[in-house]
Image (cartoon, rainbow, N blue to C red; front, side, top):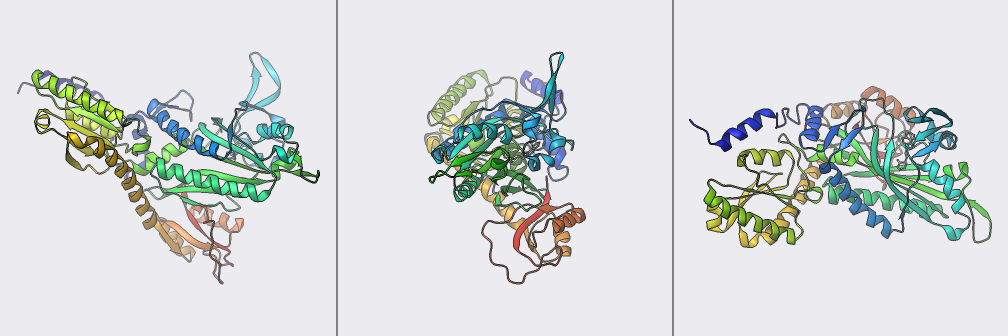
Length: 495
Ligand code: 87F
């Protein structure tokens, strides 16, 4: 059989690239994950281990997070600023507790050009120290408070564990908010407010349900009074921290001597918070929604929400179909739908379908000569594979509604999975069994770091967080050590 030039070309292309994902998500999640990131063109590997290139498709997602979160914090009175990348060693070491556990992860600059520096400079791993060095100068009186600054930047943490793009990289992007208050209760109220905003990013942008709560003593940030987090739970039985909001108490204000004159003109130390969300959140979304065909993007972060694939057989109809496809594209763009028209020649429709499925585009629209006659298009959902005809005249209503529906269906599916994964356990034995079954544990426990240490050693799982609202404990026993339980919390294997 003689093949048309079009068919030959597409065969060549599909042979050239091992285009599709070659492993099942459920069989080898980590291989699946790295293939998806590269084949969907989110991530490229760079020359330095643990440092990755965010390609436009990934950076677009980060821009959506910025566009969503930035106005929300500004509404709260937070302003953006930018502090230097380099932090003198003496400054970084000023609050000893916070750096102790992390010093092995700091990257240093030791020389400039050919001359050795008199003092080593840390490449920003987090900005508490350099920011609070200025806060000390800027805060004098209660009228200078609250001081609330945020910065969008990169940070470097020289991890020695096996690096994973987005999830555990040596350089990543984040926002870090740093606030100072006159009254502790106002600072504490803010930590919860910010946690709600992080939940909102995961729910309303990424369609990812999270567990909100307080970290254990062992898992909190060492420089904090307490740490709050949002945690997601992934299909292969691993939890992952999505963002954190810390109440720093007066730990840093005492170390950095940040004081203010209260209304009675007495000097007091400020109460502080810091909070952050990183590009790791993109990796969480990829792992949450992706399937064996590749990426599945929630519509609100998708750079291309709709891809139009014209089906053309011959030159005559091609013109007509393409013209209609162009019209359709413009019509949808007018109502702010992000549309891509794939009018590349030399690729079969089937080849294009595979590519856009791999890249996670939420909706595919097929339009051919017969559809033109019937004034309709075929729309296929990436998440469910559902295929339906829609009249051309209704697309301005149907497409936005479908995109919304996909967002909510993705969220619901993930929420159902989360709920079904939570198992209440009463004993260590039950806990071990549930972990084997890739479940997430909910249990009454004592909250003691020693108990958590032992549990961690035995099971390689750890505490994730505990709901902020706790029921009163009535003689309940710690599931892990049998001691007196003081709270209920979530436990699981975690990234
Ligand atoms: C690594 C090296 C040096 C985490 C580090 O979570 C210091 C640190 O302080 C370090 N890794 N941390 C904790 C960061 C705390 C806090 N900072 C602001 C956040 C959110 C944003």
